[in-house]
Image (tube, rainbow over all chains, first blue to last red):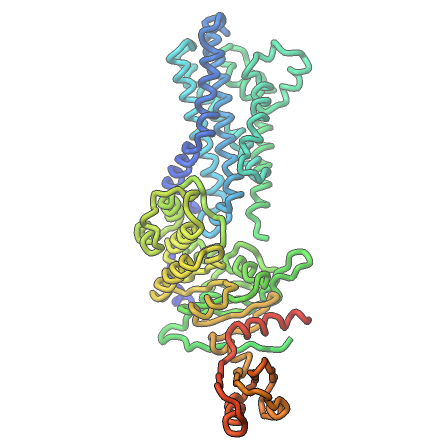
Length: 264
Length: 313
């Protein structure tokens, strides 16, 4: 029976890579860029902050270390802030898609859940790259100065490190059912940026604040990205901070993701 | 619970024995203490157009979810073309039009279709499904700006992309106006004429009657009737005879063979009987009754009678 019936089933194929493809990636990126709020907050705002607080000040052209000036240091901070907002927003698209029933619709297509998350993270990272590049362009065209090789180096560290926040975004996207998840996360991210020393150098803060800051998710990445400019070693604490937070957020995302895609 | 199932045995078409498009065996599903599906068996052969008819809460959507691999049955098996439902989905053999949701507001109609098409290994051209779903004129419109009916047509167009062997529609016309509903069904009907197998859930009797070859009546998570519209109607056997007869002799009528109920309404008398000929003959030959009307009981009667029986249990 089974052999006879098998021949009667229409022959169909399953797409490779779990349905992952560049058309999907392109349309997803276009969707993200179409969201004016996302673009303003994650690409425009960091540039505006940089121009406001990083340029035209007494300290702008003063040296922030042996390899660059304060304008460059603030540019790096704002690029990190932009990358953080971009990647979180990209990851958190999951929340919108769940609330609109799109995730369920996708289960009626060959796209595998793993490919879906891969696309979300990639799109988040692409927006993060745009944010970093735009901020660095603003820096390059104004007063930021640092050793030539530090431009690509620090940009790359900021961008790759923001993977922590792409994972954070996906985790929050599964955890929070809201369509406006970024409105909830925005103030929280600003606080994390503050604790990471992106808005004010941490050594100007009280010792309790500094101690707490060391355990927050932006701290390690900020230390690692600024280290080439200041010439100071970021220390193992910074590396451990990034690795641990990445593990926490990726683990949390994987946990919620499995619960979400389990057939009930 | 009386056994009221009447299975239609369609002859398989000549050639290879066809694998059932859908094969459900002993499907059950509970949500907490609510037993949504209580043992459904159903075989749908390729080419059939089946209405899954039942009142709200009968377990239609729960059954469809299991058919699509969106949820797992507590007991029993669901196979689509002999495969696990999720595998049939990946192969593009089955697709579905759901009641609501499942669209991204910030994409246009055409982008939604291009995105969906990119996920399958083989699809019909986007322009073709736009045309067939009757939404070619709004291809550039954002989904958020589309009316409910237009969104439903978009879902239909998405479902057509993989050119599925089996199309499942879960109450597809909910919330549509009369014109929208008629146009939607015209599109489905045209599509089904090409030989696609279609199963649709509905709680509208007239939709089941008008568009399906076969009606599977579900109530309280079980199949209570299964057959053609005529067969389901026949389950509530008999006809109603109405006549004008002032001072009707009710007692005499009740003695006639097959008479179930006699009801007097002013000058009219209504007799429900399994032998309407005997009633008519009696009325015309032995009484002063006139203006005879004989009507068969509708699908509506069958629906109410079959879906409320379970309430007493």
